[in-house]
Image (cartoon, rainbow, N blue to C red; front, side):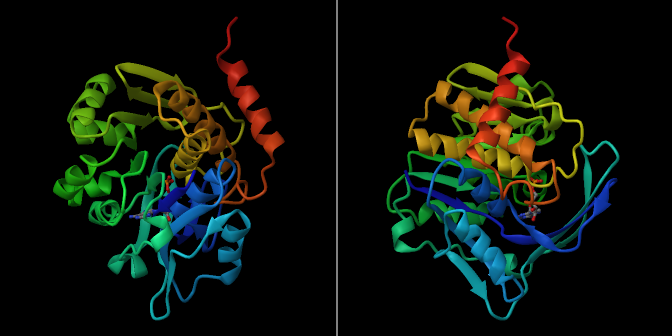
Amino acid sequence: MSLLVVGSVAFDAIETPFGSTDKIIGGAATFISLSASYFVKPIQLVAVVGYDFPQADIELLRKHGVDTEGLQIKADEKSFFWKGRYHNDMNSRDTLITELNVLGSFDPILPESYQTCDYLMLGNLAPQVQKTVIERLKKRPKLIVMDTMNFWMDTALDALKETLALVDVLSINDEEARQLSGEYSLVKAARKIQAMGPRYLIIKKGEHGALLFGEGQIFFAPALPLEEVFDPTGAGDTFAGGFIGYLAQQDKVDFVTMSQAVLKGSAMASFCVEKFGTERLINLSAQDIAAREGEFKKLVQAY
Ligand code: AMP
């Protein structure tokens, strides 16, 4: 099944209590695509980078089955750059720098063959841009999953609500769910957010796992307790990539398959945080993923 991923492809600089990196490849769509590539290929990518983006990193995406026909390269602008610093608990971070550069004027142009995609993953981007992508499709995909962040709730709430009304699944963290709904209880928050459009809602709780709401049911997947979390950047996107990649592979969108997809996403995210940036995601084997899934099963199986 065809999967279209739209989002940022970027340079990130990261500081954690364990070290720091200079500009390395990052961006929501990068993490989503790499993660999804372990389940479905090819992946259609719509994103924009600048003249400074290394060809080797584009090749890396191609090597993972990412079709880069929809990747725009702007000859006169720099790539999106984000710098973040994690606190000691690694659960919270401060954004130190956001240089939109090419992303400031991003027009998501969909190549003809992308306009009939079966599955669509809208990575964190301005909600107006996410909506434009949906409007440019020739047919409605079987499933549209959308990620967003508190920044858009603060600055573009109306546009965010318009886009929300068009999607099937929203993936956000607990703090964002509370902000969007004005409810502290996540069960109440989920009900309110579902009433805004998405039939399904995923609430990510970092090292405390993720909840899936839909069809009147709730599913919970823990996060794997890891000895060392090196860099959480992109964990949410990696989760989303595994989630939609698995659904596209199975070509099913019911609650049970989505619960399985939440486990796949959680397994992928647990790899992501073990190294800086995309480092751990680029060399995984099917055995690595199967072993990690086994650890997840053991974690929750009492009898
Ligand atoms: P996550 O850790 O899942 O929240 O995702 C981190 C990724 O999101 C980084 O690789 C950044 O390049 C990217 N990112 C950060 N801020 C933005 C933004 N405003 N728009 C698009 N992508 C962003």
